Image (cartoon, rainbow, N blue to C red; front, side, top):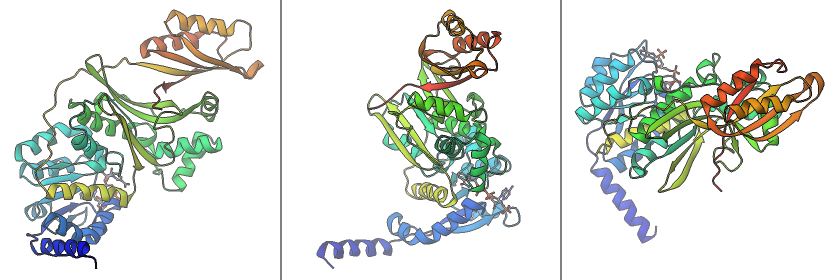
Length: 425
Ligand SMILES: NC(=O)c1ccc[n+]([C@@H]2O[C@H](COP(=O)([O-])OP(=O)(O)OC[C@H]3O[C@@H](n4cnc5c(N)ncnc54)[C@H](OP(=O)(O)O)[C@@H]3O)[C@@H](O)[C@H]2O)c1
């Protein structure tokens, strides 16, 4: 052994000798994440003890058929909540925090619907509230925003925060499969639930974006403030046509400062190849954070899975073992902006008649929408216009699309999808 490694071995041994009382963890839920957390804790407990000075251990487990919450709370320094749902979880969370016990959770619905109550209870008692695992799986977006970027003025956050939808859209782009076939493949491979509603409608991503927006802007944002659209109506044609225009489709969560307020939303959006989220494929998640001081950083990694989520949960537990606590400051009030400027892709099935393009263009022009690129596909009964617009207020664009839909030479409901024009190259 070299003299350097002997010295570090001595340091480790002497630290091990000063290990304090066990750090007791009450575990609520022992399903996919809870079991993985328990197993990971057993593997890592000695190493954590050396670093943190206390050995973490499970003091009690609550499931539907086992354990008593009051008893577990009494015997714990921290509560790890991986059972999900709002009730009885919220009551357990509040009681833990109010009694000064750290609370670590993977529950995005709890945070996005009751975050302010939880933040306030944690601030009052000085306990830590950890929720890294609630957003983007193992991607450490929360810690980077709370700590590394604490001094940066964050202007915008874009995220691919739902692995199921990213898997489906990637499969559609790769094979030309329909939405239904790609969803079936995702279910067979375990990337989508038997009931995929929360994922494919964008609701799961909306909850995560509410949590990210609260942190990015220090403003009160809850799930109810986040409009969301899903991917159920995306067609393989949309993806194929857009690819010809250099675009790829993702379900994107956006949180940004606009005109003294903030806008948060989730929708399918096309990205140009130079956007850092464009190459994120399969079930991976990624978050891009933009600030004048740093330009942008992008973090990516697996979006879910028992062991990945357990790793994020354990990271929060270790942080709770080593005060000082990082507390979210009280929220400020910023207006929520609903009508936001964006570029758009528009797909219209039209009758193959003279002047059809000029009629559509005239309506767009009347609403102040200008066309960036247009291609006509097919002919006769199969004629289609595929267009990309320059950025315009969404209300004006939607008004134009309503008028276009009413033209007798339009054969079906037009499809509109946002386009994110930014690239970082
Ligand atoms: N799975 C993932 O990849 C993942 C990723 C990120 C975040 N999360 C989040 O992590 C949490 C747990 O997910 P999971 O996939 O591990 O769920 P799961 O496999 O369904 O496990 C849930 C566990 O919680 C227990 N539980 C549920 N309701 C309870 C109640 N009212 N009282 C006592 N125990 C109760 C269940 O008890 P029984 O065993 O008795 O049924 C089970 O042990 C959720 O908030 C989820 O959104 C999961």
